[in-house]
Each structure stands twice: as structure tokens, then as C-alpha cells.
Length: 204
Image 1 (spheres, rainbow, N blue to C red):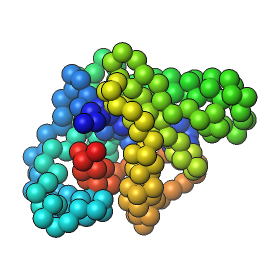
Image 2: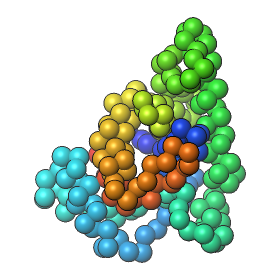
Image 3: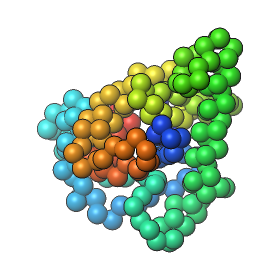
Image 4: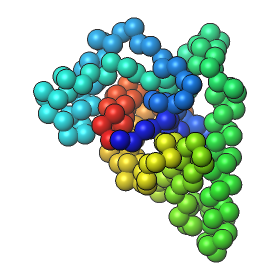
């Protein structure tokens, strides 16, 4: 069984446009008081990843994990999401990206494939500590996915590629309401994307 802790998605501007967590040690899941209102999202999510009707009704999106950033402008919402963290979420995202950026560049240089255009020509995919394993996937468009799991988990490259190609592209890029501006960063605030991703992670 794969134990997934959390997922970060960064755009080409190095900004965290989506974060969510499932089994992060010491974390508190965000409670959803309106579970029933999201049942249709869950049914479509299961169908999108190959589930049939009976399966989709048997696995509702009953525990929606914490997601950041959100459209909430109140300081109270930010305080709630950061209450169980050692550092603020924005600072944490910067630290995570900084570590991955440094590791990726070191591996690129060691492999003699360092490029002024950036990218991941050196093939950096993961590193492990004694408490977690970090998995990295960089799409051709410059979108970066960082997934943290337990140390026993092997390569998650197929999972990250699946998230990019079949979930991110389908529910974010192809969403007519989502405007992609190469000059600006915009958080992912799409309930269908969130539901499909949540159900997919539960099934791996």
C-alpha cells in the first residue's frame, strides 16, 4: 500500500498553484460540512479514472483534504490552514521548491546536461530521507509536480505522469473557465480536478 503524504504543483514561474495533503504526519484534515453537495464531483471523478457506476457511488468524496492556495481572502482562513504548521504555507512552498530546484540543478551539472533554458535534462526523479521520499515530475510545459510518500514507496513517475496527463490537462488546461496566462500565476480552484485527484490517490 502506498502512503501518500502531500502534493505540490508549481507553475513555470516557480509559484505554488496547488497544494493538498492526505496522510501528512501531525496534520489535520480540513473538515467539509457539505459533503453531499460534492457527490456528483466524486461520481464523475471515479468514472474519469475508469470506475463504473456502482463503484463511484460506493466511494464518495467524503473526506476532502486541505487544499492551498484558496480564493478565501480572510485572514481567518489562512490562520486555520497554518495553525498546525511550523512555518506558514507560503514559506513552506518556497522551501520545498528551493530544495528541489537545487537538487535538480546539481544532478543536471553532474550529468553534464545543465541548460540555460532550465528543465530536467539530468533526469532527477526522487530522493529519500529517513522519514519520507520525495518524487519529482516536470512536464514539457514547465509545470512541476512534487509528491511526498513514505520511504518504502518506489518510483511514482507513472503516477505523476498520470496526474499530469489525465487529470491536470483534462480538468485544468481544458477547462474553458481557466485562463492560462504565461505572464501570471493563478491557483487551481477547480472542484472537479480536486475530486478526481483525491479519488485517484485513494486508489493507488
